[in-house]
Length: 167
Image (cartoon, rainbow, N blue to C red; front, side):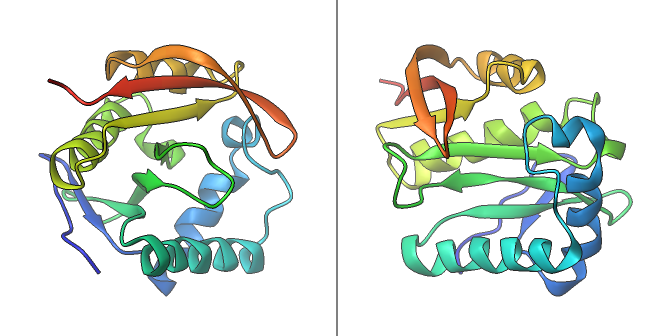
């Protein structure tokens, strides 16, 4: 795999079997279900983790599990995502409910964005965000992203929030 970055409060690491329960709790949360599939079970979550690990194998980058340094608990995920049907590399992030509202999303997404620009040398990075996901829109805006159109992903219209490589 690749480097496992850190921030002041978060350790970025590869997903493991031990993350299934925390990732399942993320998907089981009603707030998460507004923007993610609501029919997740532990078997599907296990396959989602396998998909993330496969992305690392195919692309050489991907999403990390986030671990809270203070508690050692699964805090969510963040990283770069570029499956075959995406037009651009996306900075993705999601937080376990117990870590929301504390600035972790901005902290994690900023580190993932910087990894993409500074270490992977991408020229542009986007976030595909459903219009009703106001929390993610605020995070994208705090990272300097601007709306740059609409993309239809998996049958849903997502606003594309664009970040260009700093000059």
